[in-house]
Image (cartoon, helix red, strand yellow):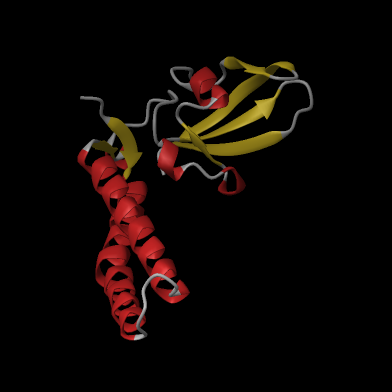
Length: 158
């Protein structure tokens, strides 16, 4: 059985979404189906079909989240000693060797990745190039435009 790495924040977000789906969305959809049934003929009842479609989506998402949580390996990087090494869950600041541009990324699980928030998946090309390196090392990322070199400036356990 494969375990999927996840940060503590990622687990909390999934549990919160699961709670919302089970306690708020599911009862709302059941109520919408009941109301649509009262309108009569179900074959031509668009409200009924829309509510059933919402129910299907909701139940599928609940199963998906429960599956992810059951196979999650929650890693709390704050409880680990800081070694200056890039591992899952750390916040790493890198400098592009060609342009001297500095950028900070947090390495997270696939479900938590959000490039706009500078959270990259552990399976992304940048994260794979950075994992295992230490402060001062240069990581080479194979990008579609060619190889890009990044120097690791800092590694923080936030």
